[in-house]
Amino acid sequence: MNMVIAPSLLAADFGRLARETDRVDRSGADWLHLDIMDGHFVPNISFGPAVVKTLRPLTKFFFDVHLMCSRPQILIEPFAQAGANQIILHVELGDQAIVPLMWKIRSLGRKVGLAVNPPTSISLVQPYLDQIDELLVMTVNPGFGGQGFIHETLPKIQQVYAWRQERKLNYRIGVDGGVDFATARDCAQAGADTFVSGTALFKQHSLGAAVRKLRKIVETHDRARTEAPAACTLETQA
Ligand code: DX5
Ligand code: ZN
Image 1 (cartoon, protein in one colour):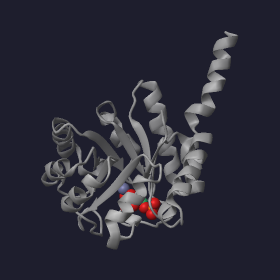
Image 2 (tube, helix red, strand yellow; image 1 turned 90 degrees about the vertical axis):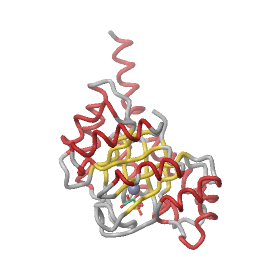
Image 3 (cartoon, protein in one colour; image 1 turned 135 degrees about the vertical axis):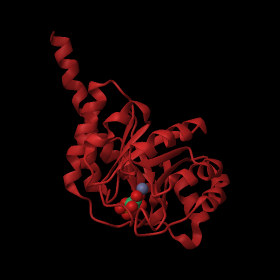
Image 4 (tube, helix red, strand yellow; image 1 turned 45 degrees about the vertical axis):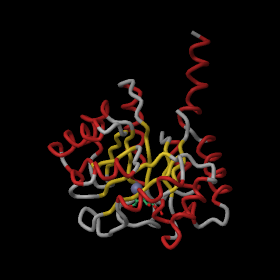
């Protein structure tokens, strides 16, 4: 699976979002991650569909919309219309909410992501693995950029990687929160292939150079790549 670098707009200069979007567009990254916070599911508020709609004509980038919201049912259509390519829900919403919302996202022709918070058991995502395009492991408690990476989340990445192999599925494995050059390497080694990064990328003078550096690190430590030669050798010997 190719590695995806997704700068998070939350760390951008909100006084110049159009210019910041253009900066991401020219950086060589793959996706733009858009954090939607409602002041209820998380203790912070970010921005809504009107902002996403304003940014949409500025770039062809894949818009990865992460809904940290208690009532996503009222937001899915507005964000789909605003130009979201993927909409990520939280598993903490509970089964009764998730299943119909996933169908809703699909019916609008958008990709479906599922996020899991650090304190939540990873077993909760199991029933949905064959219905999603991305499993997003939260590596901080969501709500704010610039927090420290929670290392205890690494076994979750290993677990969802193992499930993907066992069940021959192809969802992406994303990480979000405190992802910098060092923690991204740990995540890649654990099996992540999609890297959301806000503060670590935007604080660099050259976003392009930072994206290139991050990509090189995660490609070098890509679990799939480092494990593949061993498997080939065994096959050749057999
Ligand atoms: C956390 C958000 C993240 C955030 C990551 O609540 O979901 O996407 O923007 O920011 P950094 O990389 O600064 O931790
Ligand atoms: Zn996010």
